[in-house]
Image (tube, rainbow, N blue to C red; front, side, top):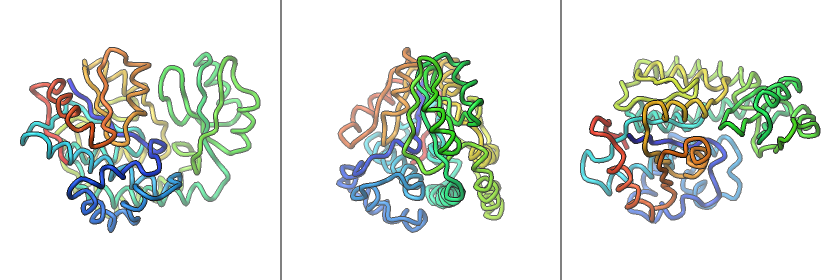
Length: 319
């Protein structure tokens, strides 16, 4: 059983699309999508030195997932690119919604553009940030996060969570960490997946409603494993509603991995820029094989990995 997973903000690195743009049609595809993303995707993916800006990072991550999977589909026989489950970390759920056929690439880039703008504007109103808390007793870590007036924004594994809130409170947590835990501030622009994003969620909800996205959402070919507790989502409108709520809700990636384990996933393929989510799976889902689709040199191996792990009942990936 194969799960295809899409990384979230923070996975991007300067120049990570350079090799991909050497493939036929990739630059042209990115240029076409740039009109809907509101940024120059080729420039951002090949020449930008700083990709921490939410307005750049989120559309770029969705576009990179699409072009890498489209390239993989072109390397395989028609109908062979299949998966049993798809999932994504935070904005990666938008990428996954294209792979399952819920959204078209154009609709997804328009959607993520508005999501990124809304979250960036909300972040600019208050001096906020996020910090990874690694190690320590889980209960003590959660208590310390709450005691410092912070929100548990990500549960990335049994030994890593992310706290979100004002930079002052992040600094206080770093100065007074839980026992046997390290607190590492992250280079992000705001307190994502926390109450500080309420204005962003409200703006994003209006956009989704006014643009009739809920009516346009197609039934997915492949079930989604949602960040909201690892639940399975098989309805396009329900998935988009979940994406709106996700702006202020924690990302529970550990729950997603527990769902993978419960359903019997044998292989996890992470799309470009890969490595973050398979790294988490290495710690918390060691029984599953992992494959990182980082560069075009990985395409042949990725194709073989899909053929090995996708079940006979897997759905066809849209790309």
